[in-house]
Image 1 (tube, rainbow, N blue to C red):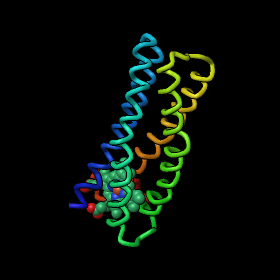
Image 2 (tube, protein in one colour; image 1 turned 90 degrees about the horizontal axis):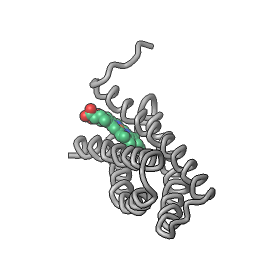
Image 3 (cartoon, helix red, strand yellow; image 1 turned 180 degrees about the vertical axis):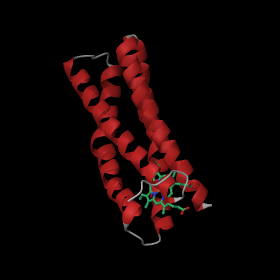
Amino acid sequence: MIRIIHPVAGALALVTIATFWLSTAASALLASEATVAAVKTAIPWGFLLLVPALMAAGGAGVMLAKGRRAGLIGMKLRRMPFIAANGVLVLIPAALFLASKARASEFDTVFYAVQALELAAGAANITLLGLTMRDGLKMTGRLRRRPA
Ligand code: HEM
């Protein structure tokens, strides 16, 4: 069961955060302020999916690791604190701040500066989660490991 929950929760987390990122970038570039406001208001609700999915992926991953900390497992474990800190210290506060600014129709310089920070932190987490998923697929032989 844990072998199923782990990759499914991890993939769900990655897809959720990629959806936040793409909808933010697309609405900022192409859409009206009303659409930007709708996207910014929806994103904090998405955390109700993202946070449990990440916790489930990490928790199940630690169980599957069974105390092993070397090699690819070590790499996966070392990335998780950065992913969590990025989420808790940057992405969640930024999303809540942007949602409240958007609801008040305050699309000022501060809004766009925080949005740029959010996109950069989001891209970092997408990369770290993508690498963590790739390492998992290498460990189970679904992706080929590079020869040493
Ligand atoms: C604390 C963090 C994590 C640890 C310790 C960890 C550990 C593991 C372990 C030990 C396996 C091998 C399982 C087996 O032998 O069947 C695995 C597989 C895998 N992990 Fe993780 N993992 C972590 C986080 C993540 C995250 C965040 C993702 C996704 C973004 C992910 C995606 C995968 C995938 C796709 C597999 C391969 C599953 C399969 O081919 O059946 N892992 N992980």
